[in-house]
Image (cartoon, rainbow, N blue to C red; front, side, top):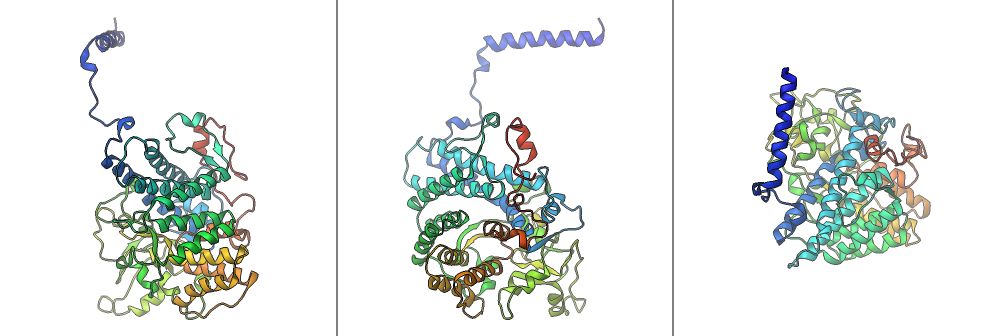
Length: 495
């Protein structure tokens, strides 16, 4: 018997012994020390822990925000070179394919959020406790938020409600029409509105106003203008939120969770991160990506020079618009203003790929954070996911485009313009529509909304270089997901 035969015989003998022992000995019938997900929800603390886990995936939506700008005509991909994060470069040039890492990430991370919300809802009847309606209201908001991100990017997607999508389900689950998913999103948000308080004890927790605002946005995306108008008017009439007098104040750390904040995704720098697991970062990864490459100067930290605003975006602002230099950092002008820095050495930086001279000032790294781990991945800047200014502009659009009052639309629009130091708009009809579109672009530049605004209003083909009507309204389903589903799903048109 040679060595190989001997080893095979020993292995076979051990396997027989193991099987015999496993069938006869009691020591194998012990409880695992790990918690079983099917028996998890036994206390209020269990529900709260699961809810925190459902919130956690919001932090990974930093890439959604970046691509909402880069895919539009607001910014260019930037970075170090034309091959720096190829997936981002491809989307900027409208040449993305089903094999795109960033789109795979969005799919995986948003579905992780859906699954964590569905986990809670699957076992929602296990236990009664005071405040349970609040927990479930937050949960349905989060599920609606994640599904909304998925349909914005991919259209018809696999769909489950109040049950997790488990390993193996991809063999049977189908892509569900977007209309069905929108109906569930609306139901989830109506439930949230009915069960959430106006104010939560913990900053960043979802409130009734956040659910109303998100519902208004979802209705606007479906051109349900009359319904959106009612929801948004009701929210505005509560007086819960107001515009911050100083636009610049919003974007500093001390301005987080202020009176204009309807919903903010919370970030922190107390825990380091690395490129091994970007979705694990508790910091806002986009902030480091947006930053000035190899920067030396006051106020800001260095970054990777992605997502750089274009000259055309900078020039779109009227003279005297207070938002331009708050939202967009003109690095040459900044260098002139700080020529005395470092004993007269001045400000220095390295020009990255597609350098325009501009940076997304709302979301670039400020000096003063802890710089734990990789400082470019652990910035504590919250993402202002829904601001009151956005609510006012959505309501203005709903009135103007949905048979409401142009006078009311002007009032909402001009409240935003007044804060920007601009005079009132008096136009009506289609001219007012165009004024609202422009105001949304200028008010929300750098916040990830512009690509989707262009698509939902039918303007993308005329505004975005390389945009193909009938194709680029949606992004491709990741090829690996179609393969795992047994190639049963149709790819989105054009891909």
